Amino acid sequence: MKNNEMRIVKIQNIKMETSKVKTIFFEDELCVSSAEPGQFLMVWIPGVDEIPLSVSSVSDRLVSVTVKEVGEATRALNMMRRGGLLGIRGPFGSYFRAAGKSALAVGGGIGIAPILMLVNKLLREGVKTTLIEGAKTRSEIIFKDQLMRLREEYGLEVIFTTDDGSYGVKGLATEAAEKSLSEKRFDSLYACGNEIMICKLLSLAEKHGIQMQASLERIMRCAMGICGSCVIGKYRVCKDGPVFNSLQLKEIRGELGKIKRGFRGERIPVED
Ligand SMILES: Cc1cc2nc3c(=O)[nH]c(=O)nc-3n(C[C@H](O)[C@H](O)[C@H](O)COP(=O)(O)OP(=O)(O)OC[C@H]3O[C@@H](n4cnc5c(N)ncnc54)[C@H](O)[C@@H]3O)c2cc1C
Ligand code: FES
Image (tube, rainbow, N blue to C red; front, side):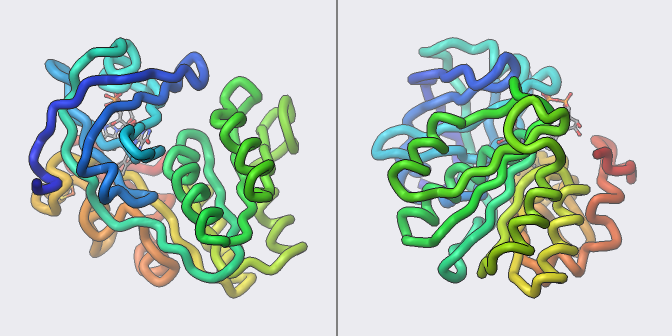
């Protein structure tokens, strides 16, 4: 089966992560056999829209996406119930690759979704991993139980940060990353979250001389490199990304964290 063929899947389970975030589980053989951390699916919500969502977990039988409600399509998806039908295409795009023996992974907001799958993979491959999950406030922290289990089982070091200090360390995920990088030597830095955060982490990776991989978001339509709606610099995020390495991130520095395309292709500022 080709990854671009739409498959109709039935929702098998739904986990409420917060009042605005749900993890939706379904069966899909192609994802189970081939999805890698950082890859995404185009999820069609019948009668509403088709949107890109990262794969957040893959087990023997089930695949999940973790969805934050921000607009019409994500709201409609999060209102669906077990047994509801969705269309999926994918998995698409580049993915996070294990490099070295120690890793610092940073997930900001819903950017923690692909980072959870990555961290699972790194730990299983014996990579000593530190994870920073950054959220605005306590009620927005997700995956706490899974991360605590990974800490028990594999020795994952977990640092939570909240902007208001209501849980974990008060401050930004980038501040915690700066502290970790100054205290320990890591072989790789991985990130997914808003672009302002990714820009700061890129500067930190350069300062400490380590390789970085980051997952970026752009408006996506075709997910096959044809329509051009996801362009950043010389790259199309759906095909060349969504995961980019340090070298590529440096090449698109002029736009990264500054400019993105709107739904009509217009250039609009990136918000924090
Ligand atoms: C590769 C990739 C992976 C993603 N993974 C996740 C994930 O795991 N979980 C999650 O909750 N969200 C994820 N997103 C973002 C998600 O696609 C958007 O939140 C969603 O499309 C918004 O649709 P909406 O109709 O609810 O909101 P809208 O009202 O359409 O828009 C709300 C916001 O989402 C942005 N957006 C809208 N449509 C798209 C689109 N097609 N592509 C990218 N951004 C869009 C808009 O610029 C706007 O800022 C990912 C995006 C990309 C590109
Ligand atoms: S979404 Fe069409 S080129 Fe990337």
